[in-house]
Image 1: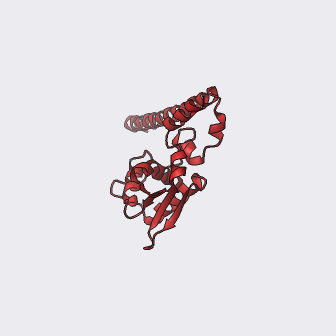
Image 2: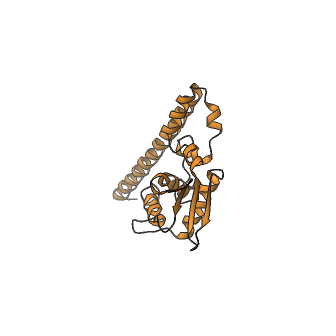
Image 3: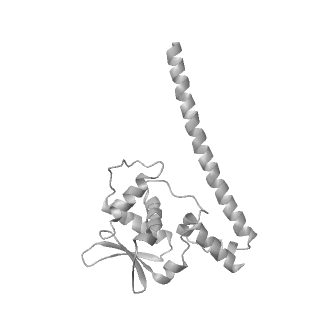
Length: 182
């Protein structure tokens, strides 16, 4: 092996090491964030609230890690993050409609912006992928939401206003609830 090849290989190894260190640093930060959140919950004597959270709420509040990018569960989290801004209130419900709210574009763009995404900047997810994400959203909220079809056959994600208001959409909302209990 020549000196030039050895130097090139050394550079490659240094890059791999730097990438691995970045990944580990992010993972450590995530774990520390979860530990801190759990310690805050425990300190407030509010573990009861924490045990009642849905899978989606645990992710949105930072108690659990987000699912792997590119999966229907990760896209369901994106839907949850977009729900407040995209949903329309009708009578006693919150609704997101696939075509009217441009879900394909919005979810695709949000996924592209995530680290580890395999989508390029011009990619769009399919309607079927968004439908699966809606189903995962329903599952991860323990049925607080449901996927329906409009008269035109368009997928709609529906959540009753009461469930919407009771759900923890962020760590801040959870902290506020914990403080009001204490």
